[in-house]
Length: 197
Image 1 (tube, rainbow, N blue to C red):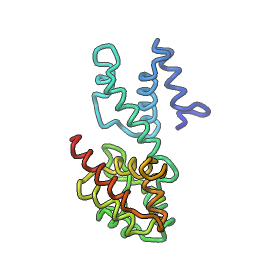
Image 2: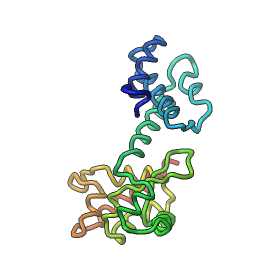
Image 3: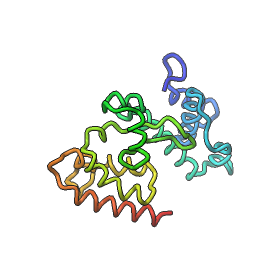
Image 4: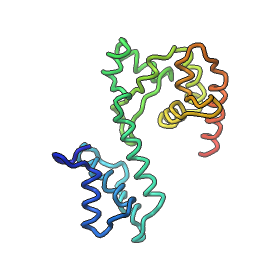
């Protein structure tokens, strides 16, 4: 994201950190980058005590710093051009918006949404190239367990040894490949998600 003409929010964060005497502290730069991105995009963090959490004792809170990094990575992924707005998904898939929304609500598709937002879903493009029944078979354990879309997306896009270095999305897209191992991995993932809560 460009904060001003010719300078990124990351560069602005590094300059600001240097001016504050926090040069070389990546957690400060991550925090400032996230804050500047929110200002540039008109967004507001969903946690009003963001800075307090990050610097609660005068030192960096590692958990809060990790959350800042996670939010930044999620925002970058959300903005990835391969994650389509509803209108772009409509045009790409040749379907109407209502049908796409209904499929998302039924768990036949998944969509990404930043924390604290209720609108502005982004649909990973690859799933519109998949056979619907194959995608639903893998999504079903996640939908039943009410797993969040970011966990689903991470699962779908991560390459796995158990799939010979392919991602679950790669296997779903190959209509000649067996889905059995992918469904097993999805069930294991759901078991891990439930155990973590």
